[in-house]
Image 1 (cartoon, rainbow, N blue to C red):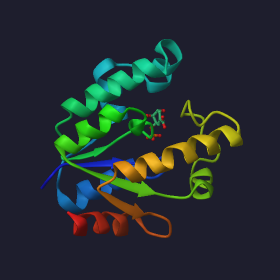
Image 2 (cartoon, rainbow, N blue to C red):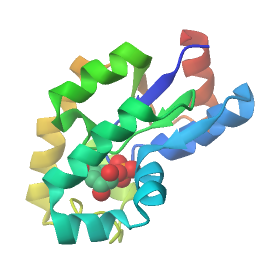
Image 3 (tube, protein in one colour):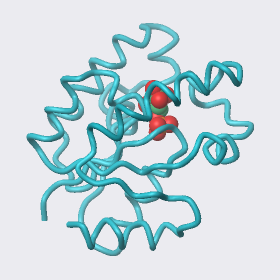
Length: 161
Ligand code: S3P
């Protein structure tokens, strides 16, 4: 099986779907945020606060280049660097988990763990609208996730593979 990179906005379900794929396909799974936290022994929020976003983006690119798992969920900002898209394409297929801004807002209500979600509604919406076409352009395959269970989404992806 070819490697799958799951991309999408914060709260689009990348880790959940990664785990669902891991279960039904018995393939190994990694999440780039966890990979970075484990490798550098630091929380993403601390890296953002102490070193800034650009440094975090470098660690993300390095994670994409080196991660060996067959199913990889990525951070929502993975499409912020054009270079990341070619790294992913060279190492596997890119699957975009799409959801509307309204749905994402429902899922992330009260979330304080994501530095880029901690801004006002208009800032969040502007970020979503800027990123949405970037995910669409990068994707080899797009799954609309709303109204589907994790298992149904995993099945769509496996059918595509
Ligand atoms: C980010 C999303 C987060 C994490 C970091 C930055 C982003 O991952 O990588 O807080 O830029 O959208 P999730 O998409 O898993 O929340």
